[in-house]
Length: 277
Image (cartoon, rainbow, N blue to C red; front, side):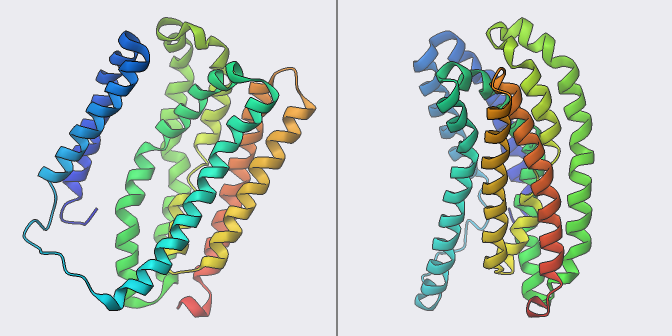
């Protein structure tokens, strides 16, 4: 993720994308054992490429006792944040499992997969920019200097995702009919979630809060996420139980839009506070 080696990481991600497409055949051919083989081959090649193209090969590791308490505290906090994020992301499946059963959860999985696919590039871009922003903040100690970049990225992300979402919207009926006919019932939820995919990019600006150690605001954003992603889907599922997939998709999409706007406002307010400048 360093500036001098990010092009290698980009190559690895491109190779991984091609491998995912090719190795998916194993799942069709060998079902469960194909899934095991898929992950084994994918992660083995990924690890090998990470080793071959690893930067700083001549730099020897050195342990500094003075850094250990700081890194431990920071690591524990990020571990807790990631666990909270994981719980929030699992809520849609839990809601469907409780109200509709395993089959309905299976039908909703393509919509969640599309969500991840649409955010593949923004997520990788964030991996590169976050350490760069951390380095800049370490030099200047002025978080507000990063607002122009964060503002531009936050507003450009939905615009950049839109053409890909539109293409997916148009071709999805043919993709499902030809390749995945058993998932034709997922078409409408997928299209609804494509709208939500343009606004589930809060991580682009939220990571800056971690960089400047605004832990209170980080918890606040995740608390808002939890409220929205629990209350709205459950409300719509209970209000319109005849089609659980569509109700849940609308609930999640509305939640993504609300949390996107709130997140931008919180980040903008926080990084202009005197304590971070």
